[in-house]
Image (cartoon, rainbow, N blue to C red):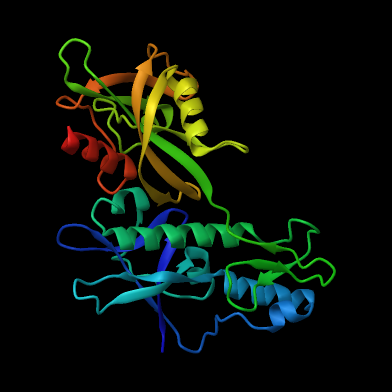
Length: 305
């Protein structure tokens, strides 16, 4: 049977236009193409030409843990994803009616499962494209013979296995009562990267939550308190876990927390932010779109107020 695969170009997904939205479109891959890893790949070293051919074929297509559902009745699904380069090199035609749409745009109208499938596809294709040689000895690598998500060095004296890396990031919603009225407020910040997106009008700037990478040796809670203090010079008190979301920019796991304001005045880190302030929940600026964990966290706080 043919494989139906999504086509990914960086963080853009090949889509078809529906009556209301863009929907990721799965292409059928010819049945005669063999993409399954072989035992030979890691059982013994291969000649350079064979290694190049094998690794190229298998890096171009990745299976999805959960199929991407492309129809309301779940009869149409994509079970794999491939890069645009793979499609072009294998002369897989892309209809002129199809377009590549950014993941950030798609998540507002897709189910959680479909968003996770797309995130997985984007991350795995990027990882495979960037994992072409052994990080220990520099030798050629090939997929693990069992189908495990690992690229294994073909040098028998090395055999180092490289796995996809996930980068933990905290994202924090900080709240306090308005000092004058008692209305619940949320700290929101405008990041420089938001002002650089063409899709965000200058007249309606986007404000998001405080977020950042967890550093080596830190707990999640320590990373949260450090990021908050570095970016807006505030100290927070009680911290409550809210949820998490895989985020393919480039390969993050966003871990959401609600933190209660404790002390300090907002002083922004100028290299990261252009503005930050507490906003009443009844008068919020332009916030991240539906589908993002930031939007979900803000809505949770509003609904619980």
